[in-house]
Structures are given as structure tokens and as C-alpha cells.
Image 1 (cartoon, helix red, strand yellow):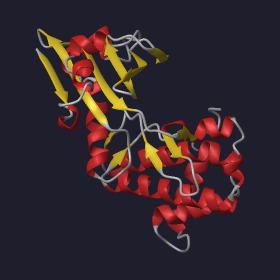
Image 2: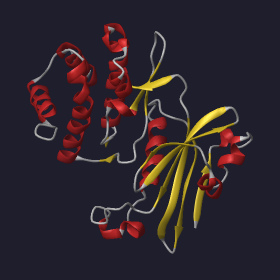
Image 3: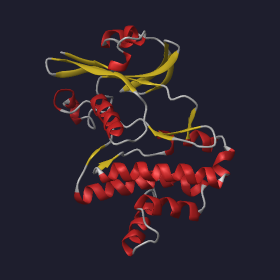
Image 4: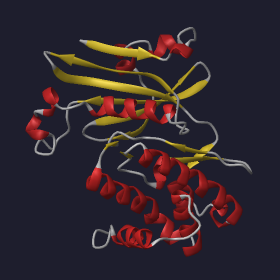
Length: 255
């Protein structure tokens, strides 16, 4: 059984002939951007634009972590979680990559392969890359404040929906150029919904992931401003101080 969806906005364009079904997508060749035991990412040109094709096949090498291989039959495919999360971001008003096409193939109930295609977001660079390049914009307080407020809103929106990204790192935040930067959230195959103490733990993890590079690049006042924007408060409460303590200690001993 094959489930494949093409964004209606692309149905009448040349893109439809390139990404129209799962067989065509798995036959594509392009620039290899990343790969692991579970997936690979290609950059493909079509109709004068560039697209990112993420293809999943198998369940990875570590069968213990993949439920001893049983996830192929019983677990939710990672590719499905990824496209559902991107659609959720769009519904919540979080800027993200436009989903062009997505779907998967099952045989006898078992996951065989799946893919999703997103359109390239022009004139963007991820924050981790900017940090590695020592981009001068990261030393511009006004620019940092604009970006920080947007990231705080993104994180707050996710968490208000009881959703945690689980990999909310600088590399997954794209920023446009120019004097008025716009932040996009991308790449979320492991995000999910939680409740209670588990949700709080995941929230702390998300914020700790953001702070991992922030504490090396930004000032304490900039990091505090981010947290206050995230909480939509002017001052910290005792509860906030306890949570911040957990955030800054989250990766202690793991780095």
C-alpha cells in the first residue's frame, strides 16, 4: 500500500512531474546533503527552484533501539512524524519549510520506505553555521534581540500545545538575511506530545538545547531576556529560577 500526497499548490507546475509519486522521488539524483543508517537528504533542482528530499528506508542499524526490529510493523514511521510535525507548525503559525510532497509505502503492514520533499527557504543560514563562521550579526545586540524574540515565541507556541521538539538546537533554526531577520524552524522527526512531569522534562530539554550554544555566544542578560520573553514576564519567579537551574545543568557531565 502506498500513501502519497502532493501539495495542491504545486499540482499544476513542473514540480508535480518530479515529485508526483514515491517511485519518482526514490529514483531522483541530486546533491547528497546528509545520510545515516535510516535516511538520506538530497538537494534537487526543479522548475528553477531547489528542494530538499528526505528519504527513509528500513529501521536503522540499532535494532534494540528500534524495538528489536518490530517497529517496522507496529511503530509510527519516523517519516510520518516528520511531515505531521511540519504540518502542525504551519497550523500553529510557526514559520517552517513548505511541504511539497510526502508519503510512505507499506507491504504486508510493514514499513518499507517513505519520503518528504520541502522547498528551499531562500537567503537563510542556520544559527549553528553562523556561530561556526563567527558571523558578525551575532555580535549585533539589535539583531540578536529580534531573533531571540522570535525563537522565544516559537518555543512558547510549541510548549503551549504540549509539544516538545526534542532537538531544538541552533542548527534547526534558519534565519534570513537583511535588517529584519525572520526565523524558521525545520527538521523535527522526533518531536511529540507529552503531559505532566514528562512534558516539563521535555520543555527543559528543549530550552537546554537552545542554551547549549547561547551560553558560549551570548551574554547572561541576553539569555535572561530570552527566557523572560519565552515566559512573557518582566521578572523571574522562584519557579522560574528552579527551572533555569535545571536548564543550565541539563547537559552537565554529558559534554
